[in-house]
Length: 334
Image (cartoon, rainbow, N blue to C red; front, side):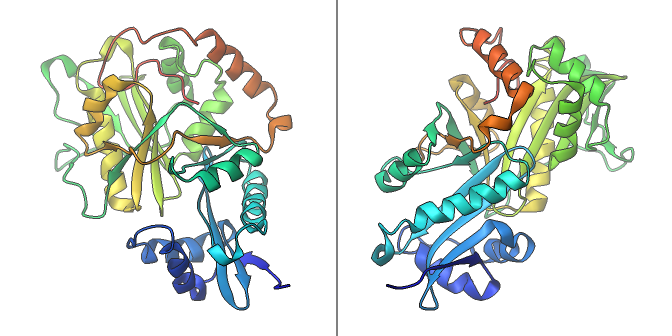
């Protein structure tokens, strides 16, 4: 029986990994992204090797908020040998060791084999749709900033009703003011001050809008900065909506995405009325992907945080947003 060796991927494995992927996906310019991943984060790039040949892969990503597994692939000659299960269990253990509470996987709806495997490993479907914007050719979205801007902030040309709104692109902003914004808009009501501090600290990038010392908008970007970027929070104070603040915040996020140049940028939403908003930024609904699949390997240690979160989400199940703005108003995040 051929011995299967599981280990971290190396730069030398990249050609074999790409060759394996071509059996399942059409060729994409992944080499540069994969090289950065293998060099900078090898613990979350795992391969299965048999007879000095790469026969299985899985890639993990953790941004401090979301954990992802993708590129689950096993060579047809080595399938049904529990190789995929072993790869997933290894990457899940490593994600959990970094503090991840859940792992998400994106799978094509016609991929019944992987769907069945994930179900076996306690993954469950979630009713969300993934949004993605292609970044290969760069984006024509520009942040509307003047040539001179305060350090750590940018002032966006204001409409008449947007006077004295300052846009900051620093994570070092008042967590208490951001939490107050959440409270006023019934957003993530389970958050404590410490949760908000963690959100700001762990985010890849934070853009915020301020009226004096009052936070009137916030947007966060998460991701590993190599393969993907994920727009997590986009919130505008109800009293300041329909004034272009949400648009300006997302423009700042997209400027950062342009600098990072990940393979794709995504956003999830189950509100159809947001389609037009995100299409302004070249987002498209990814029809080929299934709703998110979520696994919670550390369910027993989520503690009071998740209990509060679940209780509030249960109460909000039948709620609908009070109105439409530039971005999400009261959409509870999974």
